[in-house]
Length: 274
Image 1 (cartoon, one colour):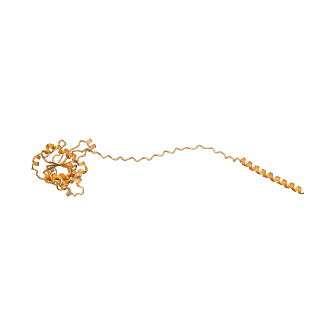
Image 2: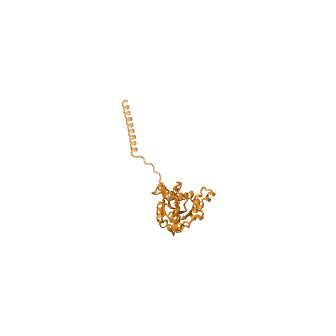
Image 3: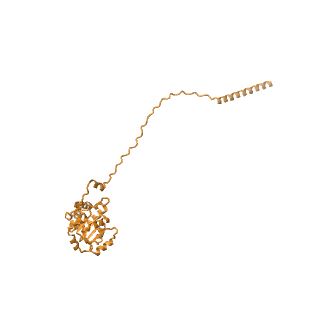
C-alpha cells in the first residue's frame, strides 16, 4: 500500500511540475510575440482649404503739418524793390507800439504832428547831401551854439560801426563842427560825460541806448536840439532796417517818450528819415 501511495504522490508532483512549465512557456511566448492590435480603418483624407489672410495694412501715418516758414526780409525784398521810409511809417509805429495800456487822451499827446517832419530821403542822397537839403543854415547854427552838454543835431543809428561810417560820410557837411560818438562799444560813458561837460559839441551820432543813458544822467540836455535824424533806410547784413531790430526799436520808442515827442509837438524839434 505504501508503495502505491508513493507512486501516486510522485505522479501528482510530476503533473504539477508540468503545469508550471506550461505556464512559464505561455508567459514567455506572450512576452516574445505581443498580440497585434486591430488596426483602425483609415479615414479618407479630405483636401484642406487654404485661405490667404489679407496683409495687415500699416497704420497710415497722419500727414505731417508743414510748419509755415517765416518770411525773411530778403524774400520780401527779392519780390519788390525797397521803398524809402516816409513820415507815416514812424507815426504809425509810434501809435501801434505805444498804444498798449494807454488812454485815448495819453495817445493824443504821443502823436507826432506832420509839421515836425522834414523831407525824407528818397534813396538818392548821400548823408552829406541829405543834411544840406534839410539844414541849409547849418554854418550859422553851429556858430551860434555855445551851450555845453547839448547838441544842435542828433543822428540815431543801429550800431557803433554804422555810426563811424556815418561820421566819415558827412565830411562835406559838418565843416569844422565838433562831432561826438555816442555809442557804447569801446567807449565808456564817463569819457562821453567829460567831453560833453568840457566843451561845446554840435553834432552827435550814436545808438539810442547810449543816448538815452546820457539823458537819464542829466548829462545831455535837449534844449538846444533842433534836428533829429533817423538812419531809417540803411540795412545791416541781415537786411534789417533800424526799426526792424526789436531792441533798437524799443530803445528808440523809449527815447521818443522821454522828451522828444513833446519837443516835436512844441515845434522846436524837426525829424528827418535818412
